[in-house]
Length: 205
Image (cartoon, rainbow, N blue to C red; front, side, top):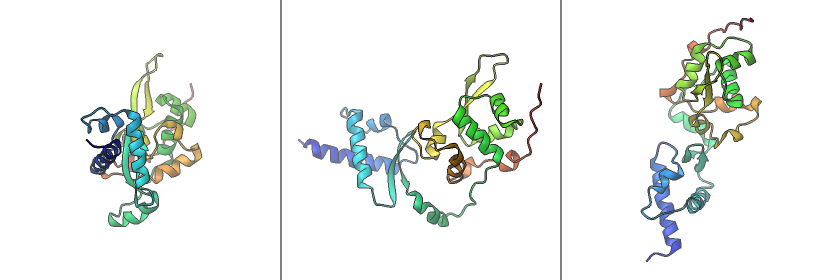
C-alpha cells in the first residue's frame, strides 16, 4: 500500500495534469472529482499550495482566482509572448471604464444609479458591451416603482483581472490600468465603435 506521502505526490501530479490541460480555472469541487477516495478541501488546498511552490521561479505560475485554480504565464512575460500573436491592445472609452468602475465598487446598481453618479445618460450599448465581455450581469430588480434591473460584476470579471474576490479590487484610480492590461479574447471583443459614441447629459426632473 502506498504511503501517505506517495499518495500526496500522486495527487499533485494528477492535479498538475488536470490544471495544465484545462483552458478554464478549476474549482475545488471540480478537482475533487479526480479522486476515487474522499479527499477533504483542506488537504486539497495543501497539495495545491505545494504545487504552486513547485512552479515558483518558472515562466508559468499556479494562481487562485474567483472561479478556482489555473496555470498562467507570469505577467512580466506577457508583453514578449504577445509577439507570437500580435494584437492591438484593447482600448476602452472613458464611458466604459467609468460605468464598469461604478458597477464594480457600488454593486448592485441600476442604470439610474450609474447615471446619477456620472451625471450623463448611459448608452445601452455600453451595458450590452460589458455584458458581451461577460464582465457584468443582470442579477434581479430593485423593488421600487418600475422595478429597474440591477447590475453586478461576474466571476469572469474577477478571473480576467486575476482576482479571487471583490475585496481584492485595487484602489479605484488603478482599475483603469488593470483593465487595460487584461488580454482581450477575439470572441469577446468589445464593439468599441458603438460604446465610444457621445453620451447625453441626464435630464433633470
